[in-house]
Image (cartoon, rainbow over all chains, first blue to last red):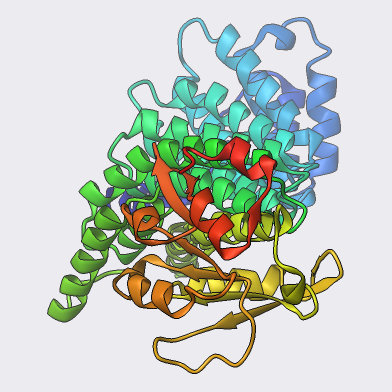
Length: 306
Length: 181
């Protein structure tokens, strides 16, 4: 719920984070650029502000750089339609960073903060977009986009906490990597390891995260179960012993995660089913039966949850 | 008004994205892991043992009772494969059922352990390899017994009983056995 409220807050902030461009700069070209921008002529506004920055005085004026950032942000938003491939966003960021650097008296601090916030959030949203449809080609892009957001975040939020947003991004990446693995479990094993890295990062942030614990456990379990499912008439006894040893290691890795998820949400049917399967696979029928009976009790009482 | 609409729309979008993220829990692999191990062992027992001549003229029958997982695994992956010239057939048998065919291997699963002695008696006069998973099963007349060692399934052999019945257990199997009687 807390995470959900954080999302809503973030949304409202994003909507409200429009730039202000009402200043009355001394440089005539900068003034003209502002007017062009306000009238919607972004191309000429861009050409004019670039012209303004050729002037030595304007080139070290934080306001001129802020206006440049604003115009490029408008181009990113209205012409590039917030495309994640837009170069204009990066130019806007660079201009705002330059404005912050030159703004020794912090006159433009609040304007720059607003600007950076808008741009940073656009990187965050894009990182979630890409991670939600992760494939072998785009995972580096998702990481780069989120990394850009992380870099910009402290510039607008001195006391902000990134944890909730990191949890969402890591969760999305972990799910994405897991799905790539599931497309071809023999060839894509490396992506399962990537998924586990992201689940671990989530657990590091929030040890009591049900989803991260449950999914990390299932990744370990499924890896072993898949290995076992490949046993066939060509499998010799020595291989069978080796496979069992390897599977057992994975079951032992899965167990603490699933036990933790069960401790966090003991009425979840998935956790109970997983514990039944793990103990059964480890030849411990007694413990498997214990979780089966617990599940039956919850079903009888109508207290079971998916 | 437009701003309010945007807020509502984007709020709903975010709500749905949160819901989707929560709904993407991994699903549990349904493989019956223990069944895959045991079925593979049974196939290897068939491969590395020798039955009397009269048991080589018919299909090689692996019968199962008391473990539906092993039965399914055998039916899915091993039925129709060959042991020498014999084609493997997999059958489920039940207590007191009249069996009108030669059984080469009978696996009595844990949930049928109480019926093990009855099966041993029933097949005593035949070269039917009884495979069990019960602590004292070898003493009771089982040929091979599954035993878990640190959660790894291995097996022990009653070679004397096998020889009495005319079944020769190969050296490869003996080499992997936990103990041989």
